[in-house]
Amino acid sequence: MTMEAFVASLDPGVRIAFGGGGIQRKPMAAAKALARSGLSDLDLVTFLGGPEIDLLIGLGRARRLAFAFVGFDAYGLAPCFRAAREAGKLPVIEYSEATMLAAFEAGAKNLPFLPTRFGLGTDIVTTPTSPFKTFACPFTGETLLGVSALRPDVAVVHVNLADKAGNAVIYSDAYADSLMVRASRRTVLTAEQVVDALPTDQTRRFTFISRLWVDAVIEAPHGAGMTAMFPDYRFDLPRVLEYQRKANDRAWLEDMIQE
Amino acid sequence: MNAEYTLEELLIARMAREFKGNAIGVGATILSDLSARLARALWVPDLFLMTASRAVADPDVSPKSLCDEWVLDRTSRMSLDWVEMFHLVAQNRLQIWLGAVQIDRQGGSNISVLGDWAKPKVQMVGARGVPDDLWGCERLCYHMRRQTTRSFVEKVDFVCSFGYGERREQWGSHAAKPGIVVSDLGVYDFDPANGAMRIVSLHPSIGFDDAQKRTGFALPRPVGEVPVTAAPTGEELRVIREVIDPHGIRRLDGEGGDALLMELWQQELEQVDSPVAE
Image 1 (tube, helix red, strand yellow):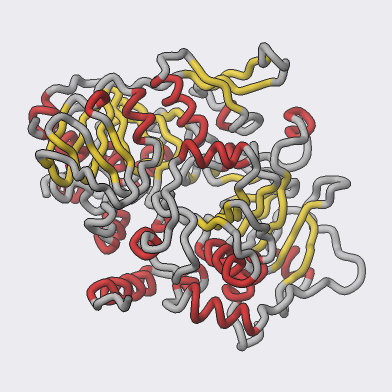
Image 2 (cartoon, each protein chain N blue to C red; image 1 turned 180 degrees about the vertical axis):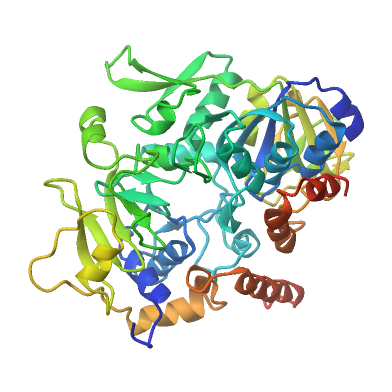
């Protein structure tokens, strides 16, 4: 599949989830292609969001965002996310890390919800868009937090290697990607390299994604853009800092997605 | 401050004292990350280290870098996925220094938003793992980079973790208790009798009035002399400077700034280009 065909297959309002975390292994090539397409009203989902989420928000493509974190890790806040939220223009659903994992797991298991203790008694439970409800455990009576299932329409994950059937490996932190893929109705992988056969003598630590979860594979060399893709390339720190300084300039951002 | 060591070195050594063995030791700030490495290097040999990337977990002690995955990959024993990590959190196997934006008098913390959640005055990063670490960890320790009346507050704007007070009474006592708070001025903990923050020690040359002036609530005045935070030992300073942070990444928490960051970045890229000694 080509990036253009993938983007053309999406409808306005699609609930789309992005893999990776912060400034690690973000599907930047896919996010930029999506931004160029002009598709709007995106219902964004991210475990730990970074520049891919930020640029879509900055260009006014987002209708809503579900997240546990959005930022540039140790290198600062996400400028467009921040501006949109402070202007009161971006509706969000705020999770914590473990509650978002529970929401994906419920989705993957085709359940309406799963219980946790994580998050109980904190303000993520009291927001007007909270996806949580407390309930009494039917066995012990203890108050637990029910986390409603999260089932994105499509997940986009950037991987190191994939074969044409959709089997793939990730060599760096896989974050919530395995659960997110299994919770999503459709999964598209972008890969640094598409190979005829994945290496069978794996000596590196890796996370495997089976073709049974994958609908399409797109080859996207350097597809993580300014974010890190272990072991191939580090995040591009000068670019990350430049993005933070300039991304709230709409003209600069429009140019940036053309690159 | 004595010229023999910097504030950053003092803080790394102080935070390192809080780690116990056979569990994960994590620092979410640069200095607290270094403190876990220091503890492991000197007196907690079975501390399980983990940095921002879970893909490289349980490594040997290595120099801190801006891209830890590339350095730690050589000695890491495993990658730890996030599902397993929260199983370990749920079973009290995580010890963590969090970096909060606000901490309150009774130990509640906030990294999500300042002001009203619906239209924040400042949108920060979101609650992240703080509401989770609250349920499983025995206690949560905080490294507050700058103590001010805006960071040490009566009540946090958005409760990512609760401390003592009403919420603990409502939600039960087995949530993590607020532990030690370390700032650029001093070391604090919470009085179990009333849940209020109190001074454990102040750093050299910092007096009670200095600390009170930069606190948004009344600190109880210690009886008698205020203890002074212990200086790092010669051995601690040697390990910090020669083993865990030879490149001086700890300076990002002090002087900071993009210029220093770019200098460290260039230095790191040059090391990558030079052959690795095996």
